[in-house]
Length: 67
View (cartoon, rainbow, N blue to C red):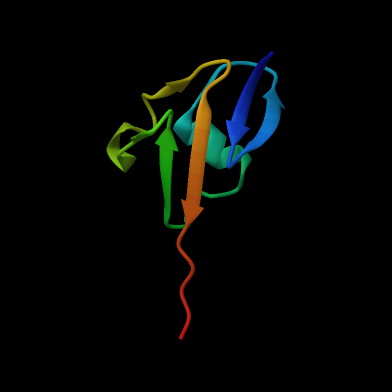
């Protein structure tokens, strides 16, 4: 079990996961979003290989269109 802080909210997960796996769990696939892990922006090309660890702090921002 690991715990991540996502946008200031503590969230438990059953096992370590990648940024891509987290995005899948949060239903962000197909949406435009940016993720920062421990103060560092993770480029989209690295989402599948960036492993999240217990205690990591994430900021997620989802782009919203409209006009």
